[in-house]
Image 1 (cartoon, rainbow, N blue to C red):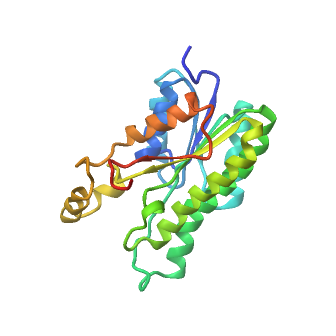
Image 2 (image 1 turned 30 degrees about the vertical axis):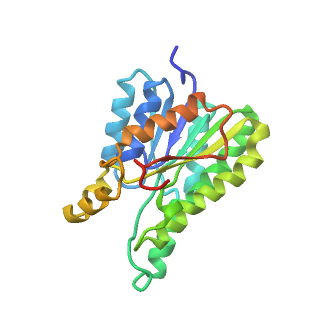
Image 3 (image 1 turned 135 degrees about the horizontal axis):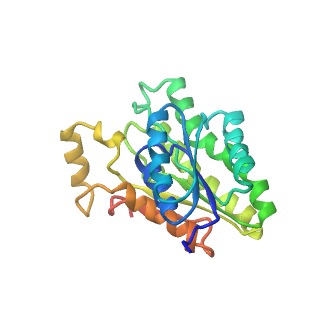
Length: 247
């Protein structure tokens, strides 16, 4: 028996980067995993094939989780297919980096909608299902930027800080239903998003990280797996995985 045999999970933004690593980690532990994507269907299908090779089930579901109807439909499709929802990982996120002087209303709303509104939509859809089960593990992917701020990322910082505050409030409401909800705040992690940063800027970022390297998606995924398997008495917390860039 694997630790998550019989459990079902949703990973939003699960086709690439941190989301992909999380989906595979949960699948290795036996969970059935629904991979949500917005635009990269081929990437999502590849992850699904990798999951099925681990002797468990996978679903691929397209949804813009920043849209209420689509986000709630995502949860419904999973419950309709597998009969339950045990683990919800809110990982979907975007950036639109600009200084406040150049930031547009659209830049602001796109980031808040995708990063923060989506968490409310999926959690509010999952809560009734998890309450009926008297079991649920919700893990929201925030960022150290939501704690420390960052130049040119006021919109992103607001969205990720909002996730932490939402998590703490929801944890108080959900605890009696045996639903835990926690946030993970990664630092700079080796993903496609970071790979697009010019090398001189990457070097400046590295100089600020006490451990002298970027994080790996698998390191974030292992923390998610811990909360999903052994975090029964952990709720309303933020776990920082950032190499010491913010303490």
